[in-house]
Amino acid sequence: MSINASYTVDRPGNGQIQINTRPGWVLGPVTAVIQTGAIIFLLAVLASIGGLEGFLWGAAFVAAFCLYAFKFAAWNKGRKACSFAVDPQRIVLASGETFDRSDITSLYMIAPKQNRTMVHSGTFGIGVSSSGGVGGTVASRSWRVEIEAKGRTHTLAGGLTEPMARAVMNEIGKVMAV
Image (cartoon, rainbow, N blue to C red; front, side, top):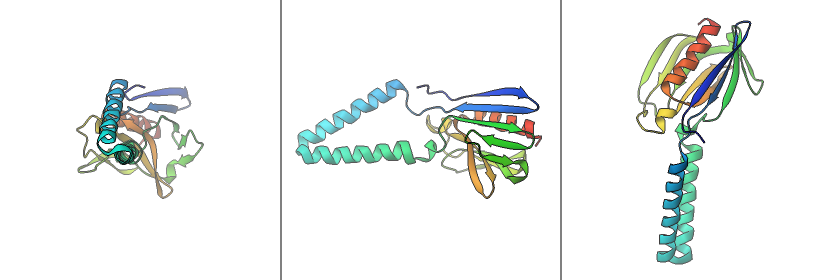
């Protein structure tokens, strides 16, 4: 599994583009092996100190931590491979969900742990991006490109670096002439 994020832009013609993104993942193979070894060592120590009860409490703690860190943490929101089409009048997700230009109220990029806001011009209305907490390894590959449409927020791409998220936004903006 690659730790680096990437995106491609295909131009089939008629002013339409197809954007495909692959997120940067949190764990590389070496890091995963080291963390797995540390977890096994922790469980062995707890089992030797507290017997079966120590092992079970340790296993519950490790499971809860992993569930939080990899499933519920803000930096993992939207971290999945995405594909969507953009033409001058609409954005169409791979799921088939369509957002007409008139339904889109904003296009923006955001990162987890929002401490600071930057305003970008040239978007549907005002585009806002947040860069709070983007200093660490995980957070630097946690940028998302989102739209607000039909009264909800929709993630177009996630798990990107800030320059990649900005490039995806720019590609959308060029096609939709915003």
